[in-house]
Image (cartoon, rainbow, N blue to C red):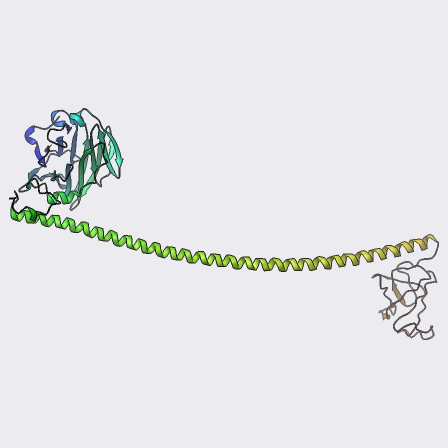
Length: 415
């Protein structure tokens, strides 16, 4: 149920108007003109017919409210057990499309606040389509569109847009509601604090935030000179703040560009180093492969030569074994391995009547002489031997030598 009519305060921009209750609810608003269908019509029905509530979460009624001197900037003060806040409402002079500005300012302590936005176009009969566009909540129904801009996180709940937040002393939280034709994109939000400062103050209709006041010196303004000077000062402060912000953004962009340039130079340097390292590695790998190929070819040739030599030795050994087998088959006596011959030792048994060239004798501890056959590496013994030539055993009565360091072995005697 709506509040009594005497509890409402009036906001206006000379082209439309809103009514605000003592609980901080805008229960009547026609946009974009006085004769337009209302988008908030709770004044004639219930909250379901459209309203915008902005007040303490406990629903407390305002403790005091009044207009700023010389204009329609409404200040509503709420006092709670935990602190106090002031809700500042106004409709700033238009520069095209209409806006409703609301600012919550913390006065003392901390106060829990709640906002509930129920948009119902055409006197509460049309429920709009609501969506998020560029961090703003926008509602469209028929030819009308409304967009809300605020740092407070809004959410949808039962076909309403609601939020809870806390305001501390010294904080200012703005809300801006802007109307626009639904077939056009939403307008950019205005600066709520600058709008309040510039202020929905009822000047001549043609004086707006973007006009130079000096151009209207022939017109009498409705504000007093001191108030007008304060208005201009606040507007200039707002413009200065915007200029400083633009300068800061430009400086930040320049730093980002410089950092990107350095990053690109570093990336190019690293790419060049990587390419040089890859080329050097490829060159070393190629040289290593060539060296390994050469060594492999050499090793293969040496292995082939050794294989050929081994095959020749195998063939020779096979021939000797075959001759030995033939001698045994003919009944010829063969020296057994390990047979003892006087004072000499010779390698591997050979057939009798064979002549064997041996190297110079080497005396063993048991005073026997060792002889080594050039084709074998095992020691065998025979029973008798004939040595020709000078010999370490002093066998001077034997036949004359056939060569220095050589002796003939007579293997005619069996074991």
